Length: 148
Image (tube, rainbow, N blue to C red; front, side):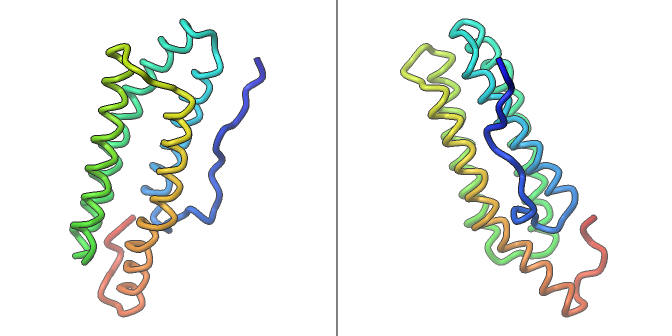
């Protein structure tokens, strides 16, 4: 089966923080792996999906912690609402994983599309806010090379 790329990183999603951009790219790699899993035979797909979904959940939690630390360090005024978005997303993903592992109604293709859409929308609408805030702090001279 020819490998199809489900979601592609575009520079317009860059927040200008190399470590966070790299993490966002990795989230898209994991989303593509989950998509690939959906395209296999059902038994093979379920096994591969189970393996990748666990990695994805761990990576999402690592990434959100990284972002939240940066927002804390710069005293980002919208940290609270941003954390709520992260918590809500993790809760929803964990519920879906439980459904999948418990044999409940679960459509992997639908789940992968949800992941893609949530990640890209979150980057473009929420993460860009702290990136813009960082740029303002840099222009004001109140932020030195705090974030690498």
